[in-house]
Image (tube, rainbow over all chains, first blue to last red; front, side, top):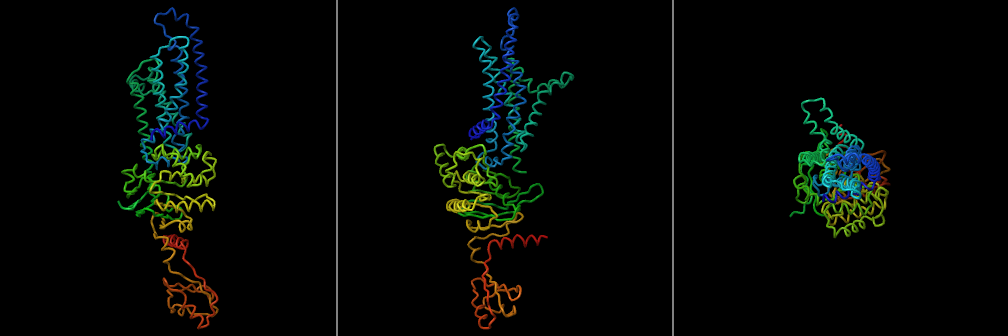
Amino acid sequence: MIWVIARREFGAMFLSPLAWVILAVIQTILGYMFLTNLDNFFVLQPQLIQLENSPGVTDLVITPLMQVAAIILLMVMPLLTMRSIAEEKRNRTLTLLMSSPLSMTEIVLGKFLGMMLFVIVLVSMLMLMPLSLYLGTSPDSGKLLSIYIGMLLLLGSFTAIGLYLSSLTENQTIAAISTFGVLLMLWIIDWVSASLSNGHSVLSYLSILQHHQSMLEGVFDTSDIAYYLLLILGFLVLTIRQLDRERLL
Amino acid sequence: MSDVLVQVENLSRYYQNHCAISHLSFSLKAGEVLGFLGPNGAGKSTTMQVISGNLAPSEGEVSIAGHDILEAPRAAKQQLGYLPEHPPVYRDASVDEYLKYCALLHRIPRSQLATAVDRVKQQCGLEDVGTRLIGNLSKGYQQRVGIAQAIIHNPPVIILDEPTVGLDPIQNREIRSLIRSLGDQHSVILSTHILSEVQATCDRVQIIRAGEIIYSASTKALNQGHESSCKVALRKPVNLEELLSLAGVDHAEALEAGRFRVFFAPDANPDALVEAAAQQEWGLYELIPEQQSLEDLFIELTHSEESAAK
C-alpha cells in the first residue's frame, strides 16, 4: 500500500516540468563547479605531491562540491516538498486517500518514500561526477560512500520537514516559504555560538549542516546518523498527527 | 449476520461551536437506496463525510457492515465507496491511470485490475476517454470518473454526494439508471436537492434540516398514501359548510371567488361532490386533482420550521 502511494507520488513529480527543471539546473550548476574545482586541483597538484599525508582529490574536489550542493538543495527542496500534501488538500483529492482503507501512517510514509525516490535519483546523478574521477585516478571509495549516505540523510530530513509544513496548509507557496525558513534557521542556528560560551554545544548539535560536514569528511559518527533519523522520524510523526487532527476540526 | 449495512446512532458533529448535525440516527439495509434531501447547509455533506470516515464524529457511532468507523476504520472503509462533493480526481492523470490507482488503493489484486477498470468504465460510460487526461475532460465526465472511483472495488455501501451535479439531461438519466441498478446489489446513500431524482431513484427519503431529520418515509408511501385534494370552481356561490358536509370530504378552504380547495380523506374520491353539484346545480366547471408532491412536502417542511424558528 505504501508502495502504491509512493509510486504515484514519484510519478506525479515528473508529470510537471518542475522536477525536470530542478534536476537540470542543479546538474548544470554543480557540473560547472565540479570542473572549476578540478581545474584548481590541477594547479595545486605539483605542490601537494611534495607534502606528506597530503589531502587527496576527494577532499579537495568532492567535499567542497557537496558542501555547495547541500546549500543549493536547502533552497531547492522546499519547492519539491511544497506540493506533496498542500496540493492534494487544495484539489480535494486527499479525500480519496482518506476514504480508502489506509491508515494515516501508510499515507504519510507513502508520500515520504515517493519523494525519497526522487532524492535518490537526484543524489545518484550528483554522484556520477565523483564516480567519473575513477577514469583518471583513484578516489577514496569509503569516503564517497559516506558522502552518498550523508547526502541522502540530509535530504531525507529536508523532505520530512517539508512534508510536515505542507500538511499544515492548503497553499503551496506558504508551505515552500515556511520550509525554507525552518531549514535556513536549522543551518544558521550555530552561527551565534562563536560569541556564546555556554549553550554552544547544544546549538551546534542542532545545526543541520554541522552533522553533514563530518560525514562529508568521511567521519561516520552514530550521533550524526541518530540526529538525522530522529529528525526524520519526528517530523513524520508530526505529519501523521496533523492529518489525524484535521478530521476532528 | 443482519442485513443492516449502515448503522448511524446518535451522531453529532460540531465545528467549533457551530452544530452541523445533531443526534442523527438511521440505518440502511442491504439493497436499499436512501435519498438525503435538505436545503443548503442542512448537514447533508457533513453527515456523509462522517460516515465515510473523512471527519471524526463529535458524538455518536457509525458502523458499516458491522465495523465501527473509528475502531476498525480499515475494515469499514473497505466496505465503502465514497464520492465527495468535489470528485477527488487527479487532473494530471489519465482516466485509466487514475482508476488503476484507485483500484490498487482499495486492495484489488493486480490480476483483477484490468477487469475491474474495464467494468467500471463500461458502467459509467467512460470507454472512449480512457487515455485522456482527467483535467481536460468536461465536468460531467469528471463526475462520472468520480462515480467510477467509488464503485471500482464493488463495495456493499456506496455514498454519493450530489452525483448528478453538472451532468446534461441524458447523462443524468444514465447515471440515475446506474444508481438504480447499483441499488439491486449495493446499498446506496445519495444526497441531492433535485427532488425528482429522489422520486426516480430512491426507496426511502430523509429530509434533514439544520442537522436534524425532520421527515423520513419510503418513496412509495409518499407517492400513494397522502391525502389528495382537488381544486373546485363553482359558478353559484356555495357555503363552505355545505362542502364540508359531503361524504369523504375531510376539510376544505375557500380560495378566490367561487373556488375552493377540498381535501378528501385517504381512499375517498370526489363522487359525492360531483353528485351534489349536479343535483343542486352549483355550476361545477373545474375539478382539478392536486397531488401532494415531494416538492410541496419539502417546501412545506423546510419553510414551516424556518418560520417557526423565527
